Length: 85
Image (cartoon, rainbow, N blue to C red; front, side, top):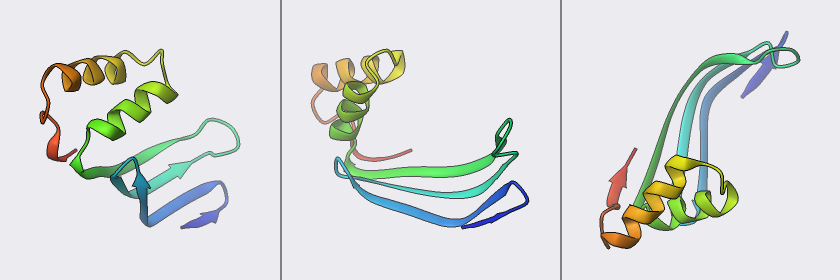
């Protein structure tokens, strides 16, 4: 990653150990100090995304998407196995 003149360039970011998931990303974010915007290409990979989704729903209880995905994971065991977003 590089930060120059308010532009954050992400060549390769990989974060593992997130409830069994790994997030990888590349992209740029501009105007960090004022009004951030940019383009990010990210993927989430896991043998089973259900634990990651459950952790996201617990962390962000008002997030409708995370809450609904958690409900579907509970109703359909294995739904998010071998998943990649």
